[in-house]
Amino acid sequence: MGFEGFAYLGAVVGVALGMVALLAAEYFNGVDVLLPVGGGLALVSVGAITFLISQNDPPAHEH
Image (cartoon, rainbow, N blue to C red; front, side, top):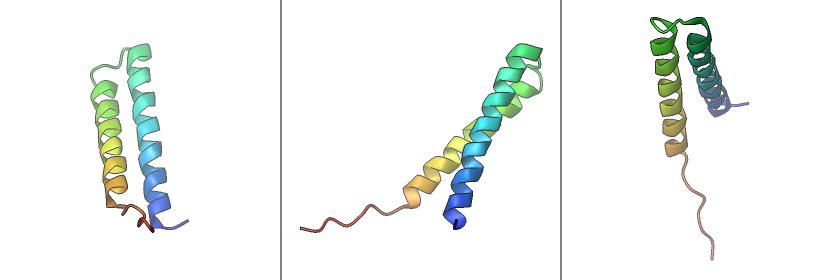
């Protein structure tokens, strides 16, 4: 797996951990800490995925 694979893996794991923190904030009433941390992590991870996708060139159309 190349660098892009690890970058995508890290971003997807970041989204998953962010969502776990958001759900834990609801369940354990950790709104003071877990909600901003989980939301920030999920937001940054989705931004990373968007950035990684934007760096890929579309395939050339051969006619």
